[in-house]
Length: 188
Image (tube, rainbow, N blue to C red; front, side, top):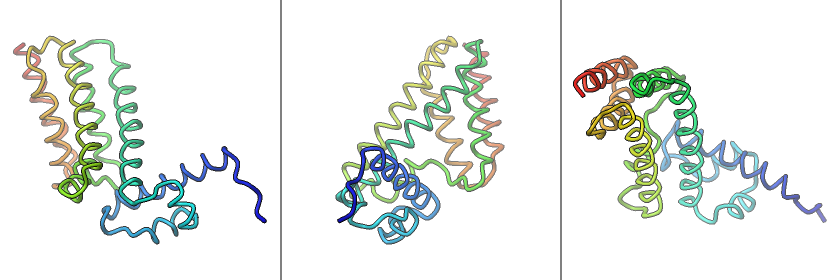
């Protein structure tokens, strides 16, 4: 009889599974990746995978949730190291520019998931909406602190830059969006 799995081993297995699934879903698309591919990439048996996540949809939601926490935490760490509120807003676009040049950049994981599953999965749709609201709230806080009376354009320009960079492969759109936001800040 095999030894019981420790809580630490369960945590490590779950992280390994989420790492493998996130990489595959982001690179290839959610629907293009079967659970056998997730099994092969994670090295975990399907029984163990389904013990963590009874359905692929559950795994997708967990991947998106974990990515949201890491993505927004990384963004905040970059932006909040800037002291000046105006420059802090602009730092958002500097961070996006760096992200757009990372190898394997395929745009926004949440927009991609929405495009694939938004109409058919309430759970995925809820997670996408949660991320988008949290990102909007994050950018709104920075924009208001910089004196912008209407902060929505900052979030819209960031979202537009993300989508455009993914479609065109041009990371320079972050600089264009940054310039537009600088104009908004100067007119406030």
